[in-house]
Image (cartoon, rainbow, N blue to C red):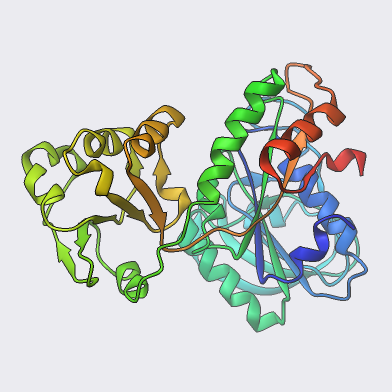
Length: 335
């Protein structure tokens, strides 16, 4: 049972894709089938709409998600009404999504469901936490279009990355793009006594010295970096940014005199909105990037078929990915 045994060691798992149509829902369906006889209690939800038979963006066929008896699921009122199974309602949220309140229910039999769960990562984390009330062992989360933020270790304990021909029809290019995102998930964790304190800080830019003293740089926006050059480069080798990091920030740091001594710290890899070129240029200059929370990537799943009808050789794709990444890579349709 490839990689599905590892899933049950974690309280939560997100399935996130590099692009749309990379096989997230196929991967979730495979996992559910494999775990059906595990005797573990599962929960399923989504950020975004998942489980519809026709994709709302591309109008291509999508695999529906079939649940079985005793699985807990969370979806919107609109899609709860269209479910194709009996279910016991356990909770109705006070908050609204665009598709109504969220219904938490227990499946009473087998049938298909469309998922449209919490509308943001914070709400998703709270929803996962509430699954303890129903003695859930593992919560599975199907992501939405390019929502790598769901892979944040602040939201789910583990993740599976999906990629495929929808990203690129050229295997070397596809492998290179996937490897870059994979490398971000492997970013080294900062080992300091102030990690928890940093996670609680309000938005902004901070520096840390070698004794881990924290200084608030009082820089309100990334757009004001040039005016605050001395603040950013003159009071500590560690720079902690609470928000997202873009090319403009790493390029700015790269050309500073102390770039070779600079370590840029972010909460987790999902805050890194940077290109391969900017990342490579920054690290080549001697700069480092570290995280407070490290992601737990269990596997990569590939979809060799694109919506345009391009089909890559599954065996060659999996072999090339495995050689490049060094972790399990699967085409779930071939398992």
